[in-house]
Image (cartoon, rainbow, N blue to C red; front, side):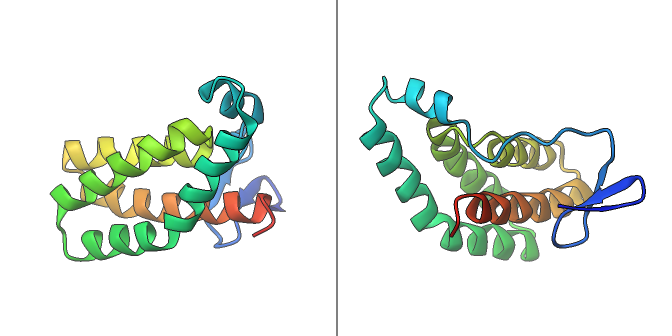
Length: 130
């Protein structure tokens, strides 16, 4: 994240208010707790999430472009299943916000929500060194 005066921006130039603390890309302790302390299982779940991420992001973007809100909501909901078990709070929160925007029928929030999901997915991958 780059800082410009009082505004923080992600790598795509999307602003974050300076007083906003971003959640970590991954919470290792929560990932272990979600798998009953099984580090190998936690890593397998994260690997599966990361492997499917590019296709999921493409489907999200395509659904948004087609204004297919039902499919968009289904994809976001399914992705949240993985993000919650993998303990990736920033991406999970972005997906939850996107689901809420779709439920509310708020198109500007949906568009911005898809972008936020993409930003957080990218941030997670960079944080993990991928």
